[in-house]
Length: 127
Image 1 (cartoon, rainbow, N blue to C red):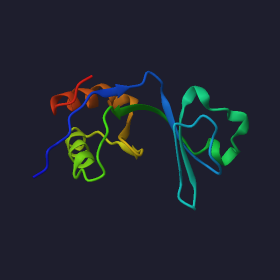
Image 2: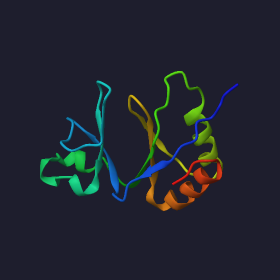
Image 3: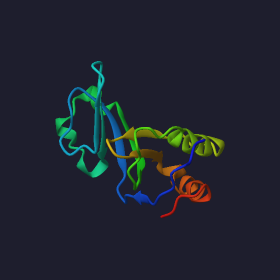
Image 4: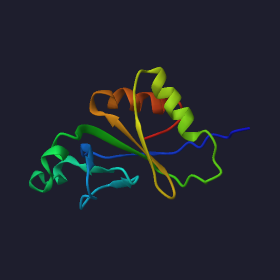
């Protein structure tokens, strides 16, 4: 039986962008290089337009808010993101998930941020 982890949510005041680029960007919060493309999650205030190629400028998705689950999540944990994804999906909220060694992070569109926080608190997380 799954025992769901509940924890504090770490919230960031910054707005983030997701950028498809050709190389990692300095100052990025997260970088994923899958061999076909490089995806960077970066604070919008850190984007240096002069270093982005024109096609990269066309591949910017702005206005995300970042939420970190402020706890260590064991590798054996099953269903943590599934439950969060389901709860937000039921509210019509999409999310992007990034995992680090110890925890998970989600990106929520600015327009859905307050609604997402309300739902996360409703299912047992706290701010």
